[in-house]
Length: 131
Image (cartoon, rainbow, N blue to C red; front, side, top):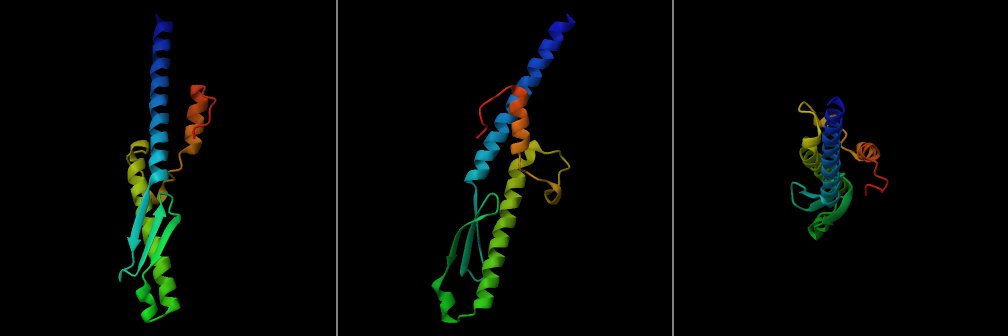
């Protein structure tokens, strides 16, 4: 009955792969839809970034023109975008935790799962693109 046991183990392994691949696809969809917004300390600058930390929207309150200081404004913009991107990175890390080892650290973890997803698709014999 060894062969039957091997077939059963392979079936379980395939189911595990399929669940993992589906979970990664769901993660990727949530990541694509994620938006994180941060405001500067004075509330005059608001930056929205994607889950990958890319700037998707920037709002500058017209009150900044009451006392124009381009250097300060530039610093606020950059700082607000960096803060929003850092928040997005933390949110993405939390979203990815089910796929990471328990001791994973945010500064040492790359959550781009596309290479793993392609490997899983190949192992499952899927020929259609994962996206």
